Image 1 (cartoon, rainbow over the protein chains, first blue to last red):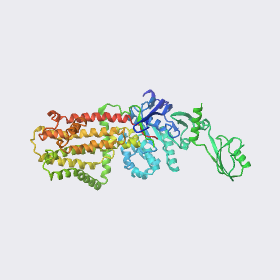
Image 2 (tube, rainbow over the protein chains, first blue to last red):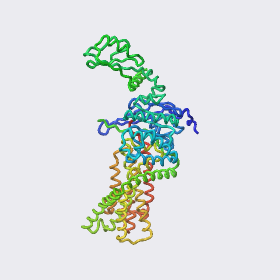
Image 3 (tube, chains in turn red, cyan):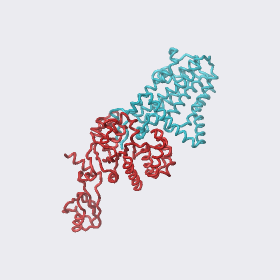
Image 4 (spheres, rainbow over the protein chains, first blue to last red):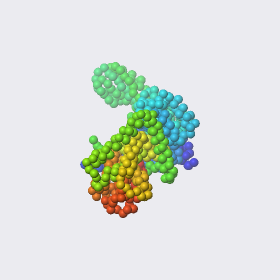
Amino acid sequence: MGVGDRDEGFIELDGVEKVFDVRRKAGFLRRERHQVRAVDGIGFTVPRGEMVGYIGPNGAGKSTTIKMLTGILVPSGGRLRVAGIDPSRERTRLARRIGVVFGQRTTLWWDLPLRDSYGLVRRMYRIPDARYRANLERCVDLLDLGALLDVPVRQLSLGQRMRGDIAAALLHDPEVLYLDEPTIGLDVVSKAKVREFLREVNAERGTTVLLTTHDLTDIEQLCKRVMVIDHGRLVYDGGLDGLHAAGESERTLVVDLERELPPIEGVAGARTVKVEGPRQWLAFAAGQSAAPIVAAVAERYPLVDLSVREPDIEAVIAKMYAQRSGM
Amino acid sequence: MVEVSVRNTDGPAREEAEGPGPRLLHGLRAYGLIVAMWVRSTMAYRTSFVLMAVGNFLTSGLDFVAILLMFSHIDALGGFSLPEVALLYGATSTSFGLVDLFLGNAERVGRRVRDGTLDSLLVRPVPVLAQIAADRFALRRLGRVVQGLVVLVWGLARADIAWTPVDVVLVPVMVVSGAGIFAGVFVAGAAFQFWACDASQAQNSFTYGGTTLLQYPPTVFSRELVRGVTFVVPLAFVNWLPALRILGREDPLGLPGWVDFCGPAVAAGVIALSGLAWRAGLRSYRSTGS
């Protein structure tokens, strides 16, 4: 066992960078070249058996990180180890120990029924018969795949396909499972099913899970730890509660007044951020109660309707990043 | 719209570091697995398979029908009789058909690079080339091989050949090393698509274009072209040079006699070079966003 195989630093990144050369057409034959730092010096460790959320806005570098952790992309700099293996150098060897699910596209064979895809996976990974049967049975059971096994992948709905993909990624008992947007585009029922299953895999098998997502609910329900990346840098690494505090996130009170009025003023702890006809938006700290603000508005303005919006993760992260660059 | 072309800056996405021998076996095994599965799934629709194979046999035979029509007006083409042209045609069609059968889908790599689906091949524990080549393996392409063989055998039987033991050995060597050369061209073309995703047309001009060229005697083409397919893209070694020896003819470039036997060496060289190109291509893969 190598040093990096220790449980504490099961996944280990140190100053990892990925730089893309981008050439832009600037004329008939002229090309302007510049470099894009998709991942700009990221370092973290994930102990064996942990389930970690990896979030950030579009283009932040989430998928690029996952692709480096699977060996699809080669880092431009820094050190990266998964189970003691350098992914890009020994991609095929690592492949036996990891499972990958890309939410945006399937890793299954488009024209084949699930059953045939799984059979091929079994032979490719050389999964012993008994283990394969047990794993398949378990996945079919928990992910409700029984009726889908003989359906070609292209005929599956997005949610069915995703469940099929997750099962395929787990048949060889991977030690690490990477999920890139596993709930994207799924309906509420499918999302719940997928989350339930992931929780169980993590708890029972001790599978280390790294999950990227846009859906904060995924993180809330699955992960104790969350990492936030923006512009290729890690801007937060810790518990979910700390995230709102760190981002100084705000909730929004949306009020509909009887008629168009100048922006609401003089409400303690809140400020008007937007006015659109009779509707106005007031921002206030996420930790504060909405009741006194509603009362203050209702007392002085002709209130028709109101709603409170929770801070969304994009906004929290955007704010977090703005703070960092302001430092 | 701004066109943005992107190039990777570095680094190897290497295959399993086990040394070339075991790796080759490993790749072949994976290739076999995937092919077997596609064949099984094709055989679920037997009638459809038979019809497709026959269709493939007939459509690929149309080329030869064109040659037959030509010979209904002329007695010789560039000094070659119909059976002699049939030999050339049959040899290159068989070689090309074999490669089209076994590696034909490698040309899809460009699309996979463009849409990023190559990612899913890279996370599996088997070589990417084996997965790409075996993807959607179509046994119906056997039709082209059979058609080529039929014409080849007919040509060999009818042409005026003073058979020697060397000639007898040279026939299968020609077909196999011809397939090797085409295989190298296919893989090199596929590798090129890592840099230019839309290059499959350029590749086609060497593969489909190449086999069409080789169906005709070298004497009907200009010396420059013949030189080009001898020394630049060595397609002349697929059938022209060995077939000319079997037919007892001089080659138009007047090369020394031993060159006629270089097919296997040329095939090995082309395959080695294309393998390097493939590795370099895979290294430069940069995936797509998200």
